[in-house]
Image 1 (cartoon, rainbow, N blue to C red):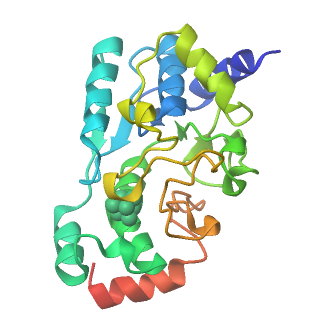
Image 2 (cartoon, rainbow, N blue to C red):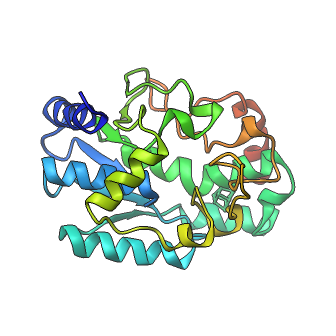
Length: 245
Ligand code: SF4
């Protein structure tokens, strides 16, 4: 069975198990993988919610992608915003580009602008689709296709896909592509924390490039109780208390 067939089965099965009354959604930042997931899910169940984090630091090209997706599928992409008061407090106490100062500050920014808003939004979902692939980085080498260790369940239908398979699907279905790929980006997130990669670099090398490899995730993982849980949490809590955010 091809990876496309396998991914389609995973999606159809998840829609049956977790769907109904908006019980499942796609969460994407409109990188190629996310767009493939959007396409496959919209084919299987048109109108399935598509969510994206509008962190307040996105590149303008990402908004072009949102427009293109909305036009193509006739949907309205739901933009998840951080709490304005939390952002204002963080920026006032730590500065707008605090993530350059230390790993802890970067985690704080990602928590305020990404993790917490997403956590709040996902609380009513049974499951969500994400475009993670195992070959993207060492940190993703062991991801499950259906990760039931957390709530909501995280489904990664492309876990076994190569970047070439993603490119092939994108070309064959004439999917819109994020404009920053043409500028040498291979992974796209917030504008100040993403750069183009150099030849031979890891696909995720352009994300938080000033940090060590083990740090290059947002912490978008949830415990069965729906809480973010990572080794940096103790440190993070101390920072949050100090920063009052
Ligand atoms: S990616 Fe950068 S700007 Fe975006 S939330 Fe994380 S630290 Fe902040």
